[in-house]
Image 1: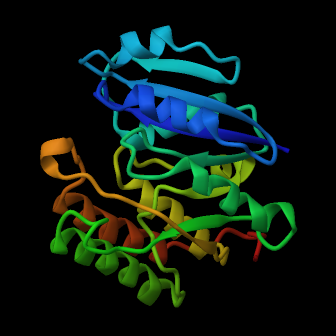
Image 2: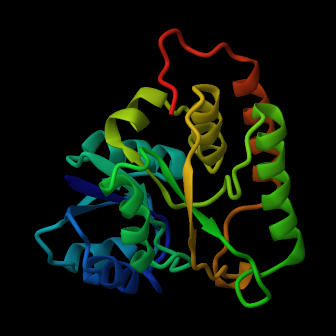
Length: 235
């Protein structure tokens, strides 16, 4: 098994070097590749990526910023692994948790695995951020009669072929809701494992806003009203 770690990057010159170092330093239980998509960064991110030297690393550049969903699509289109997981470059997530996501797959318990964040005073930069996340997750659970714990988690691990088959169209942060909505519509319930998390604040470059939460709920509603594809798998 080969795992493709997909890293969308936009204006992260202060963190990208550490993000690469941390991701590549983990002792993974399988072969990996790190596919980084520089999504039109206008700071020094591109120069730092250009100096990175590791046989497991591939860098792809968007000439213009297209959004997280578009960057992930580019990464998935170029992924050579059997499985994929998304790892943002903002250092909010710890790549040391990725092997924990792989465990249920490697021992045959799951096909899709989500990292479930536990929010606390040290890990969430605002009350409303946490409430927004919980609200979007609750909307998914009500609409699809499911009980997932963290829809907006970055850590979504699944087969590359499955992600491609979902045909994700959202170009921005809405891709998180679209991925989950389409999985739940096909009755694929993610296996969840607890992960560590530390949110950064606006002054540190936090990009997601309340508008993304509204869009996420709209996308979930849209996906709920669509018919499940004929022959869709059930897991």
